[in-house]
Amino acid sequence: MRIEFTKMHGLGNDFAVFDAPGALPLDGALIRRLSDRHTGIGFDQALVLEGPRRADTAVFYRIFNADGMEVEQCGNGARCIAALLAARGLARTGTITMDSPAGLIRARILEDGRVSVDMGPVCFDPRALPFDAQAEAERYPLEVAEGNVEIGAVSIGNPHAVLAVESVDTAAVERLGPAIERHPRFPRRVNAGFMQIVDPAHIRLRVYERGAGETLACGTGACAAVAVGRRWGELDREVHVSVRGGELRVNWNGPGEHIWLTGPAQVSFAGHVEV
Image 1 (cartoon, rainbow, N blue to C red):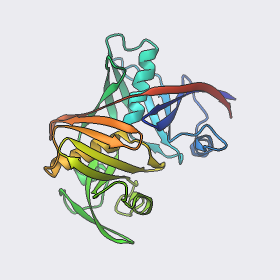
Image 2: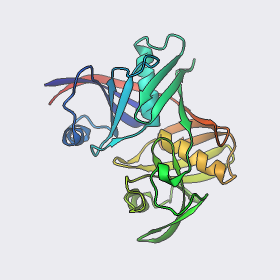
Image 3: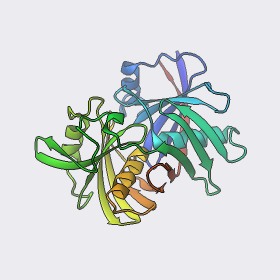
């Protein structure tokens, strides 16, 4: 069977986007095979576009990490889908509404080609991630093999743990990332973000993503880091987030408000694969 796809990326966080007007034979084993960068297409996540389930939306999309696990949300993926649908003429007013397992996502196509997406409200309730904690707190101690680390925990439609580090260049991402991702206090695993605060309007960030490993950029990870940093009283409402693939912008006015993510989204190529 031949499956068409579009390869896209947001600052190097890359995706294979599949149209699914009917049932595609995508399961965990096939996703893992296609995600391989030597023998498959190669991607951090697969995005599957289905027909809209609501009259006020253009699409319902699903997200699969490279390890085959279906997950709730993907910020850079949402921006790429919005850019692709806009190129197909589905955002004539410059805006588009999409549906996802984590709920509705509104997107704006900016004049410079960047895409802003409304990632919805921020949730610090540990049950939303889920995260095993007696009560909600600004900071949590987390015991790993190397000792205790301190994290902020937040849901941006998907679960995130955020650590403050002196420098992302020397942060122990390769060692701590997998340990935090699969920590037993996160029963559905977690994305681990390593945040260096440069000043109140600028952070540097590396993210070890659940089911994909470290990526060049993580959109929900950028939102999570800013939300946690603002809760700690260390960041402004608008923050520039420097990731390994470039720069994102996050805007969040605070509790009860929606958080917005802005950055570029690009098509790499279109192709097909036999499965």
